[in-house]
Image 1 (cartoon, helix red, strand yellow):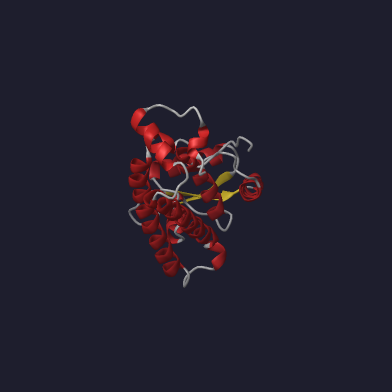
Image 2 (image 1 turned 60 degrees about the vertical axis):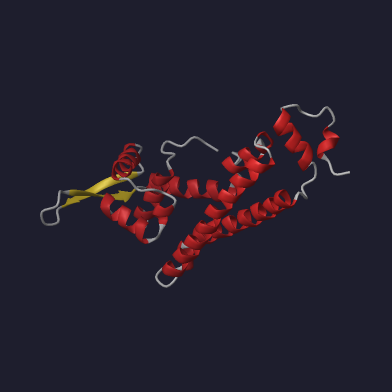
Length: 209
């Protein structure tokens, strides 16, 4: 992927709001929270203002006016520029159409799970599976809450997140069942390796015969 002038995904979220209409940062945050985007993008005021300033610096946003509402501080309203619109569309094309080659953290952990031993692996997988189950329920509840008020077009990433979380939970549950039942090929060789620290000369010990 190309290195972008503003690579923070919060910047992408900001552009998604102002491409609809000009807004000040407080409005941007309100729209993102209303649409449930804060679940994956924790919105902190300092970070938001920094991102907006960087987008303006690079010509993707421009200030159009300052507004004052009652006793609140004056707020600057920003709109997207032509360069910002082009950047926004190009960024989305990249994210949708380009395969991310950076491995997920879970995959990296699985590649080295042998160091834990079967018993520790079971404990950690049970913990992860419990967290995945909680996330599935939270995502389902979020969809139930948002579907009556938002078009599906604004919810497809939540649907994707739910589908991926459910798929990971199914895989983790099946792998955990192999470990707890002892059905995983080579599990006894794995346990001996963990207990003695001696790696077998013959990898065939890890293969079901």
